[in-house]
Length: 537
Image 1 (cartoon, helix red, strand yellow):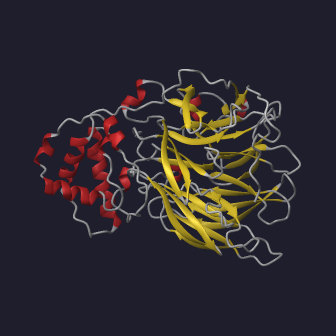
Image 2: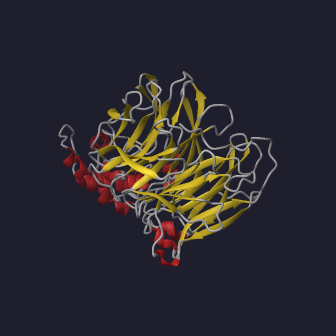
Image 3: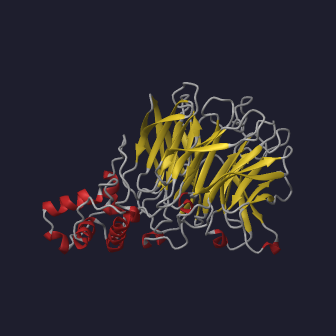
């Protein structure tokens, strides 16, 4: 959910915050080739080596140097102007800004007249997995459909079958749908402001499943203090739910995950406060309640950068303590590991850094993609909502865990507008495949995006260890900000669900609020080979 989190003006966020050095910076040479040869701009011819060095120093002081090939030539007037405006408002005066017209000329001379967007290469042989698509419709009197920011397959009652939980940004609902019902409809559990992530857990250790909800506090990106974390405390198994605010006065909260970080037997929360320009950070909410008290939290800042999207938890170094990985977007575009040193103290280790601030990070998921027993990072970048421009770098990648906190970057596929990817063994051959979805603004640019219907749902089949081929499942409907994977019908194979994301739901031209892709493979598997639900904290 990077954009509604406020995917802040990638290029527009130039020159504001200090850079954080990282390891494993991605080499963008291939993207430069794809951008095409740029015609010489006459104004650029007058730039000497000293002027160009001044431009490079200014434009790369706070972050990696923006890549000229990410925008067509005519767009660079506006992007440079925005960069200078942000520098003027930043309060910094320690840099030496070159004349604006020289910076414009520098970028125009290196930018292509037209951006060509690479597409996934569809495998010559079709995938043996077949899906039957069920489109769930709202009642006729509903008027408008939800705008879904997050889906989660989970149990609300340990003795009942799982339900599909959803966060609706349009009406503020946290709801659940029983996919085994004859006509599944969302049942409202609570109405908040702008919920964007829901996490099941037993927060008060009473044996009943609760929900922790991240609430952005506003529909559109902004700096404010209306973000909050809400505990939906189940009064009994499966609800009803009591709404308890655990922390408020925050910027836009994108994610919150529970774990006992300080080893005192109580669940704490790690929080991604995405914020916007002036707000945003990573927080530890430390549970300081005494024995027998209702959970009560003290807030501690772990990292003061805005722009964190996801904070999945895992013991990365095998020391028995929960660590977490953070995807920090905005001008950083970093994947960071925060190693637990004990008692809730953390050490930052950079795992990977994107090529420039327009990379458009949109989400990460921890998964053992190569089956070697350790957690890798499945990573999408396709956010185009900050300026409505897509670029050739969008796609799906895999950060392979090599051990000792070293990760190798693998580009899996190009995918314009890639927003969420999840892994699972869809074809039952014993390895992990991937499904990825696309979420694009309704008037996305550049015009080359209209050359062909954009891919909207893509499968990546793992045909051999570490080798993936693409299968386009759907084109022309880039409306999905999220998806969820699970064996929804208990038939032994993995299905998946997608729903219309914020700001594009009406583009579906109907009452469709959710699509279930029922896997028709039904393969025979060894007992317990199909992954179950993640363990409850």
